[in-house]
Image 1: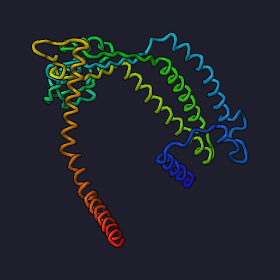
Image 2: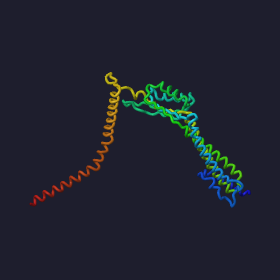
Image 3: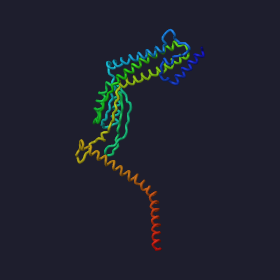
Image 4: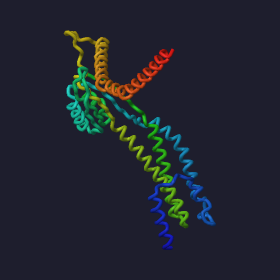
Length: 313
């Protein structure tokens, strides 16, 4: 008896360390164990478990559709903003404080360098926050209130009610199967029966934890809205001035594109003169000069032979 107990414990710890095995049919795992059925007075519990699970799954499928249509909607709402501010770093810190004041938190923040049309280095920043979904509109209004200009604003929503209800249905079925397997395990008489049921319990409990994790993710996504904000320095969007004239609309965009072209073309010429041209000259000297000397020598030799033949004539 002691040896059997030790074997059971050792195998249990080994299975727990190796992880859950793939989910298999309980009936197929336990059928044919031993020379006689373990429960001769009633329907085999593994078979009963499988049948009950199938019936519950079929019933819950239709119930889940009804619940998804009648329950309160679960909508994940997120927003993306691109705004122009006077000082990106200060605006980023202000948004972080706003998120904390409203009961949210900062997911990530970043500050980096950008350039004005004139080539001046200016800071630019981005920040991602999460705030309670019921305060999403309020948060967006406060962020835009301190902006010089709103370049882009996108608010999106995704209804996850059906997916969440389906997970609830799956969780209910798995928990019912877990309970029935626990009853089978408590009544098992042989070591092999115990190990087979233990494998099924391990697999089901792993699926239960996975589904609970997905449900928690949906709940947090619905409760907290994500807002991503790009903070552009005001200097980068300053209007072009030509002799006191401030072009607007398509004229401003066309002139801005022309300025960018000149900048890029100037950078290309500088790079060509200081980088690419010296490389071409080096290659020409190393490979071109010897080749030219060889060709010149061959031509002189041919010319000398031609002159010698003419003199003989």
